[in-house]
Image (cartoon, rainbow, N blue to C red):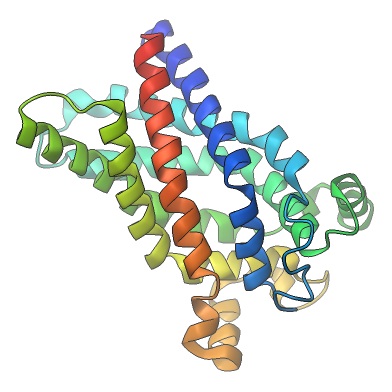
Length: 267
């Protein structure tokens, strides 16, 4: 990858991340509270819907920038070795690798953000300080495994679908897609991916919000999913699906549309 392409991916990815995270933050708060074990009302209801926004603001740019740099570098490096038929496999691999790298920043951001969302009276700074004091640095990475296990399946569905829809639209109109068309493809891809991976998102949220020392706090996804199934059934596994799908559909439109537009402008 050329230096210009690298910088374009870095800046476009970071700007796209900040755009979607800050614009749609209230929907993310509602989703977190719906998924919390204590329930929507006790977690804050509609009060303080911007609780935790400083954490999101700090982490969104480097998180998204790291993802897209990794994604584009992987595509650039392996692209010549891949045929048109196997291109979706490359997109799956590149997106999965990008998610794993991005989670190094995303997980600490998510831990502080979600705990602030579930306890809006504490404030972001106090949540961060309490987490460090009580659990140390490992506390900021609580749920790293469950986040990666959620993000990889999500990325393996979203990005090949996004790339496929762009190719299909381009073929239909016999010209390259515009940024707004890329955004529409991103909305469809994001919404579908969000729906099918909601149970993994619920498990990730429960693990991050669990009290230290509890079984859920150990970070094991399958036992957490089993416990949710046993206590709340299918509705528990898909709690928060409406705000999640709405948030990620709108987020996919803004995120991938902004990335495509800024990336083209910088190049």
